Every structure is written in structure tokens, then in C-alpha cells.
Length: 132
Ligand code: THU
Image (tube, rainbow, N blue to C red; front, side, top):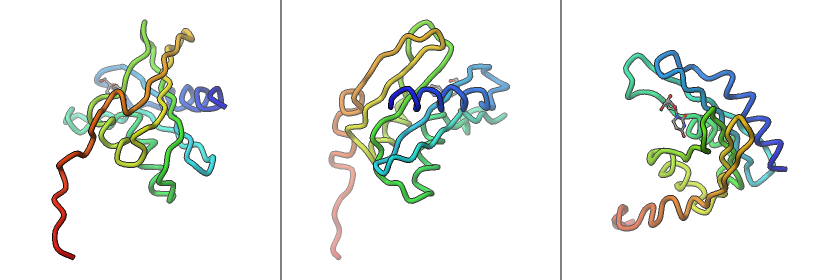
């Protein structure tokens, strides 16, 4: 089951739009109902507008009505498996704070993380309840 996500992430990585960093990243997540959504990083000449692979697959899933994520695979051509950036952690935690993350290198090394470990207390104190 993990390997289907890895395969989808690897295929998505080849569709990355990364003319500035030349760093290609692929990701794929499985939603609660078993659907797979893939993503790649999409860079922009205004560099801060770049969107990471992880957020691309998350927003694709949400747009299809899939609000709960069971697992995500990430792949990049690095020595050690990469971890999602802080922005992606926060976006993923909005939907699945205990998401299981498996990150792969192209050479086949992998490392597993829990999003809860990477981002403790994702929303504590942020939302102030107001009168209904
Ligand atoms: N990137 C991702 O897509 N995911 C990560 O987890 C790390 C970074 C992208 C953003 C940018 O296009 C390039 O990799 C270099 O940071």
C-alpha cells in the first residue's frame, strides 16, 4: 500500500515545475476513502509564491471532497529523506494532525514520521471562539 504512494509520488516528481531551484519534489497522499492524490512543486519567478509538492496534493484532495488523509509519501533526489516545510506541516495538520509521512530518496532510503511529532500543538490558542 505504501509502495503505490511512493510510485505516484515518483511519477509526480517528474512533472515538477522547478526552473529556479532545479530541485524536483513529488508527493502523493491517500485519503480516508482510499483515493490517491499526487503533487509536485510548482515554482514561480516571484520565488515566495512557490508551492511545495505536499500542499499541491493536499489541495487537490480537498477540492475533491476528501478531507481526511491517511498517509503521504514524499520523494526527492537527496542523500537523506526530506521533511515537509513548516507551511506544509501546518496545512496538512488542518486536515490530519496525526498523518503518517513516509519520505523517500530516489535511491530508496526511507524514513517515517508522524505529523504530530513534526508539528506539535498545530492550532492551540489560535482560534478565539466568538458568539454564534
Ligand atoms: N519543496 C517541496 O516541494 N517540498 C519539500 O518538502 C521541500 C521543498 C520544494 C519547494 C521548492 O520548489 C524546492 O523544493 C526547493 O526548496
